[in-house]
Image 1 (cartoon, rainbow, N blue to C red):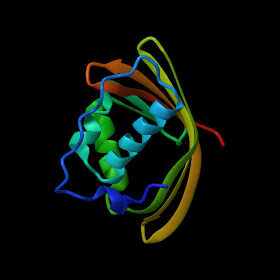
Image 2 (image 1 turned 45 degrees about the horizontal axis):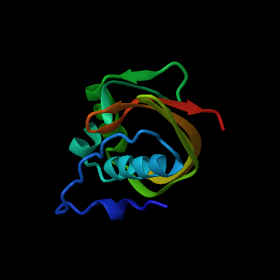
Image 3 (image 1 turned 60 degrees about the horizontal axis):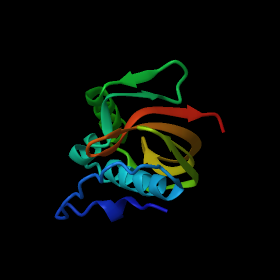
Length: 147
């Protein structure tokens, strides 16, 4: 389970992304997700940017809405987290696989947050498509699945 307070140590230096491994197994996928989640939960936008491919695209849970491009995705994430308090976030049932320079991570997630003065719980399943880059795996596509 990830708790947002864990990632708000502003004095800590961000660790650089590691080179992409030859394979993206379940353990490597879990480590990537943990670090990626730490960046957005901690609202560490420069660190999060390093996890996003320049041509990243996210499909949202709202039908037919997608956000494309690193800048647009970062702005979308900033706006979604503005005025929001994340109480708890965790991922389960995580699986990672790679073929060449393309990796896929599938997982379930649960989120408890306060948004608009209302505490809410959400859950879902996502598929992430990653691309190997010189600095490590970068997010290329995020696809939410029906749960």
